Length: 450
Ligand code: SAH
Image 1 (cartoon, protein in one colour):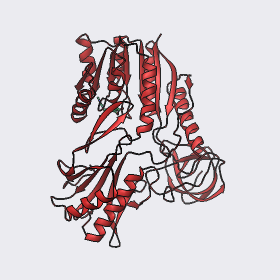
Image 2 (cartoon, protein in one colour):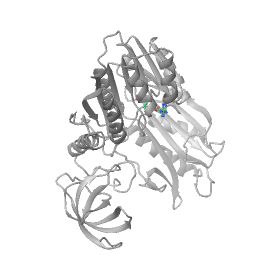
Image 3 (cartoon, helix red, strand yellow):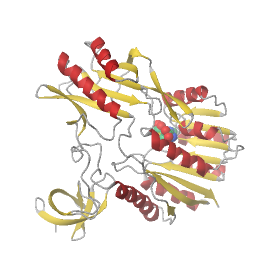
């Protein structure tokens, strides 16, 4: 039996959902942060529960052949990247195996899972950064949260962020320190600057910077705008957002444009998107095109189909498939996302889409009762997967094909099992790496009526 505080030699066999290594001691599961399959480590047991333990690595006795030196020296403490110390090809294969294993074990389905489509350059891929601001020893610190905490890891060289976002961090840090602008403290709820959010249109080079403050004022505003304008050539929009609530939510209600416009523009393929401070937009523009391309290929549209895009967000997939479909219905629970979806349809001259706001589990059965039926259904649900009533309605609609875009292989597998029992067979699965160096796994599945 394992003893709390004792040290054990553990062979890492697998990776967990959060990228932590998993090994066993006498059959008992131990999670070891920072371990990767193939490592043999000496670990101290820090937490002991009924079904599992958590160990901390004291020494790597033998390194996995997939272990590499991460390009960022902070990756072992920063909450941003969990598996940067793993060779990129090994990351891709691990993600493929995770999908395959979940579909087999939970869904009881044996199917083709293709090799994960990775990035040619899996760095500097993020088009959006949300940067908490803190203070340590009288100096501002901007960066990302440590794993499992609200302590900030200061960084001015995050390697998965667009280099522009990194430039913005440096400018804001200098602005705060030079002008002695106060910084928000979560515990005392005093101080001004809370967060910086930056967004970059990868295809246009347009940049938005949002400064979120606890209170109405933004001192030395002109100096700040000048500094940003001088260094950031694509600067299109500087926004001041006020959030004086005691909350983990980043944005407050009030938003003022203090330079330029209230939005930037980006393209996915030949589709144009307006991105505002609040709007949701896929974080990895390059891989989003790959992911949607696969969804479109699986949808196999000829121009005569009625298509449902359930969990449509700002309508990106709806608009992507609209040109090849007769009619597309998008369903999404967030009102502002639906507003964006409608606007995006207009600016792209697309007039065969209709968007509905509400819970998919309410709206989809309602539309079906009104006689709306789809030939092809695309779903892209949040991590918890599809509600049973959504799946039931899809089956009742009797579409030829379902295309399932998933960010969680476990709930995907559960939903595929339901579809499988109700006359829909999984044809193939394509994982796409949307978040290199993190444990996130995204895939697209083609499902056909038997
Ligand atoms: N397809 C979009 C967004 C996918 S993310 C894209 O590719 O960008 C999942 C979306 O589901 C989010 O926009 C979220 O707001 C929405 N959502 C979550 N629960 C929902 C529900 N019960 N009904 C409808 N939409 C929901």
